[in-house]
Image: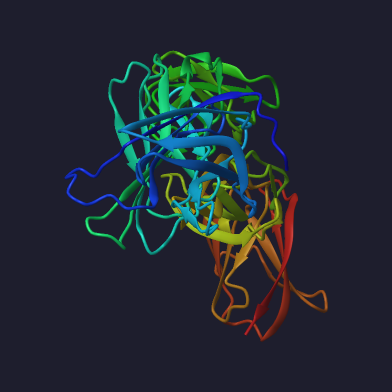
Length: 497
């Protein structure tokens, strides 16, 4: 590719000795510094060694090319400082440079070392964080190389260095910027030659870029964060919304929607937890989201929503609930299938049984056995997500939990027989139904026992009857239960061992 030299670029060639100035000059020139070029308007070269009163040609090539091109400029080595101007290089490309001298008689060439410019690009992540990116750096692995990002405030205050651990790095996030200041950034590569004593140093400095966090109006959502919801300690009247983040966010605004409505602001706090009191999870389905506020008062977009699990039951034993929703960036958290477990809770709030595990949101449960001693039981759904979180090139496995609201199911007027089968006694119990006497009938239709107090022990307070069946023959029988008005309450069958 032929370049047209129309853009003026200053090349200043100076005598750059080592810190000790103890070694003798070599006849071959040595480039000790390259500054700028990509995105900038000038490149600065500093050269040591070489022969006085000798003309050197500046050559260049594109960084990804192999052919060197002679520039129309020659640099004459004299005294300590050499100045010349090189124009026409395109400021949006990366170049490699070298200088050489050609013997007019022998045609031999004396060539310097090669140096290549580096580019640095910036993206504001927030008003306190910037992401820097650059092309992969290729350096001689036989040399000692140090690479750093140098950054400071625009006036040079608070200068810092971030050292790169690997040549394969091409991205770096710098946090903790002053959100009210502009900041300067550049990359500095220091390469120490190991072939000579004392060792020679080459420094490559990218062009400086200026980052202005004050231009941000709406901050992006932090991808490395998500919120989860759970029913609080006050049961149906409180929901707790927690924000998990890999970073310390300064302040939060919390939002809520009810039954799919608009997100409305409900609070503001420096805590990453909000207790939403006075809700009614029996009737409503809630979703939550948040935005963070920076120290400079800038607000982010709303985060992904997280929603409660709404449990309801249309018929006894059939449970349905809304899915457990957590919206999070897939690059940060990879969610596996959600698993649901039914919890049965007694009057004290203790879990009697953790019942069934399913990935469905509808489940038919055999709940009859829980109504022997109480006509009402309370149920809730526990949801569990096995998640993989990627953070700092590490993968963490963890669980996300959330409880649904609770529902109480009142058993209709029904009578229970137990144990069944039995060999000595049969208990008849009803949580609500009132009964006064019974009939026992064999399978031929013959009444074996009818309201005989010799066989029946009746406890009207608890609606529990204990019947002695030890004298009955083995087989199957029918029990008819009547109330005190001789109305049939229920009919059951049982087996005598």
